[in-house]
Amino acid sequence: MDTDIRREVVSVMCEVGFQEDELLDGARLAEDLDIDSTEMVEIVVALEEHFGISIDADGEGAFKTLGDMVACVTRLRSPGVPAGVAATEG
Image (cartoon, rainbow, N blue to C red; front, side):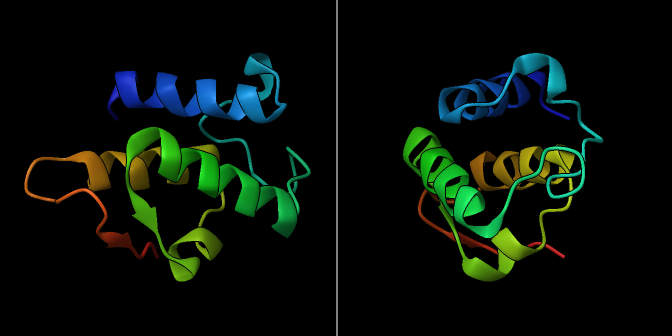
C-alpha cells in the first residue's frame, strides 16, 4: 500500500469530518465509521477532486473498508492509468 496516498486519503476524509484516529485501514465504512450513501458520495467527490481521478458508481459501491478506498486511489494514480479513468473495484 502506498503510504503517501494513504496519508492523503486520510487527510481528505479528515477534511470531510472524520477523526484521524478512527481511520484505520480495516475500518469498515458503514459498520465502523457509520458512513451512509450520502456521505460516501461526498467522500468520493472529495477524493476525485483532490487526486484528479474519476471513480464510477460501481467502484464507489465496492468500497467496504478504508483500505479499499486507498487501494482504488493507488491504482488510479499508478503510472499507465491516465487521470480521469473511471474505476471499478470488486
